[in-house]
Image (tube, rainbow, N blue to C red; front, side, top):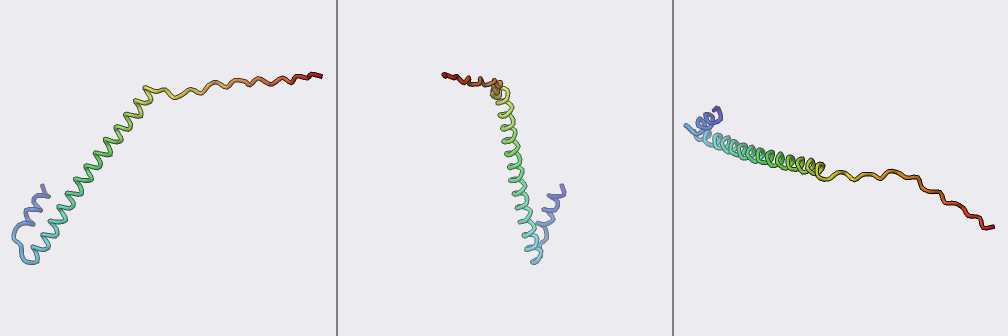
Length: 84
């Protein structure tokens, strides 16, 4: 647990300058932890969303078949009728 050891050493024995530096380091650590939590949450959210989209698309393929293209039929040629 090097992270917690680092935090406990930061919180011990402050000098005047050390207190300010330690506070800034501690503050940046908390911001980093919050950021990592948010990032992890977003990754999980995106993964779930992608998984649900994949499931929807595969289930759509299973349920609905793509429309068949009708076979091309030869068009009947118009017969020219000569009344003369």
